[in-house]
Amino acid sequence: MRQRVRAGLLAAAALLVGVHASAPAEQLTPWRVCVPDAPFPPYLNNDPARLGVAERLMVEAGRRAGLQIQFERLPYQRCAALVRSATLEALVAPAVAAESPGLLFPRRGTELDAQRLLARVALVWLKRPDSALQWDGRQVQGLEPGAAVGMRSGMVAGVGRLQELGLKVDASARDADQLLRMVSGGRVAAGVILEAELRGAPEALGDLRRLERPLLVEQYYAAASAQLTPAQPSQLAEWWRQIGLLRDSITLRP
Image (cartoon, rainbow, N blue to C red; front, top):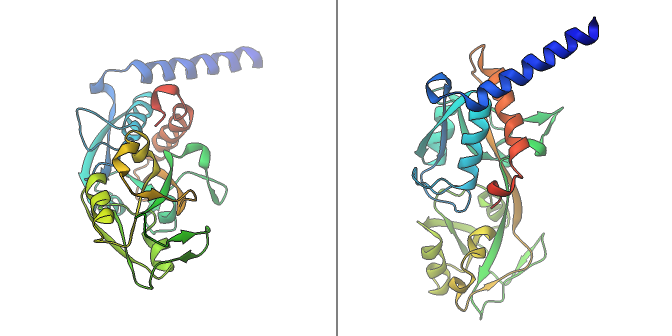
């Protein structure tokens, strides 16, 4: 008898998953996700007609969880404020924001659950050929204290680490091309960029050099508001679960 009941429950669960996977948009629960208003390819393209891999992952995982993911594109700090106030349901956030009040991250016990992260990204150093910059993973050499290091506008991960090293962050670059020009032209002493942005066009580096050891490797998550309605925690848990199941599929790799 118990086996028949258990089988029935499993069949019902499978049916529910199938309904979510194939449900039309009008049957899905709207779920508003805030992403940076600057592109960070290949993860976030800031283009509704051509979503990045992290955006597509959130959409497909949401569909399977019964959610219709709707993107809002705003500066990161504005995204975080809107999610904390429950004006929006979720945002893309780095692991360094996990201790921020008002935000929920997937956890296993007290630790972040890396099985349910959105993306793991490496931030790498760029320097001019005549630069003495060296980096051993702990200390930076060859840069003056307070030297300016260029980053992309909207980048959150890496800012605190550079400041800890006694460096100034210049985040005025709108895109990767502008950042490369800033480093090459001497506007900043060095640059930090997503390693994945260099894979597609290594020739864009020109004479610039990339250091082998990254500044850091950061994990990004779909973080949610801590002010959830009674129905939302289970929806969030299923969305996170589906993100973990789908993330490494061949069509969603950066």
